[in-house]
Image (cartoon, rainbow, N blue to C red):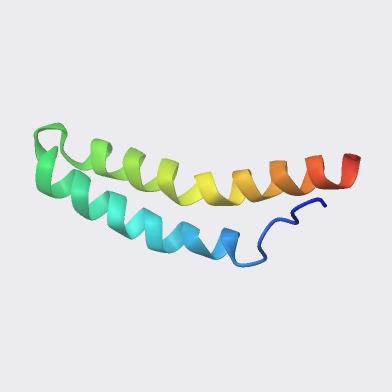
Length: 61
């Protein structure tokens, strides 16, 4: 039985972006604004991309 991707996975993006930005600001603040921005963007788009890849692989089979 194939596992379908969960429909709520892309909605984790903003939550993960906020968490990553807060953690980057707290622990990696030596890098400043750009480090926090990069961490938030990367962690914010990761669930969306993972969902699209999972969905593409699910439909391919």
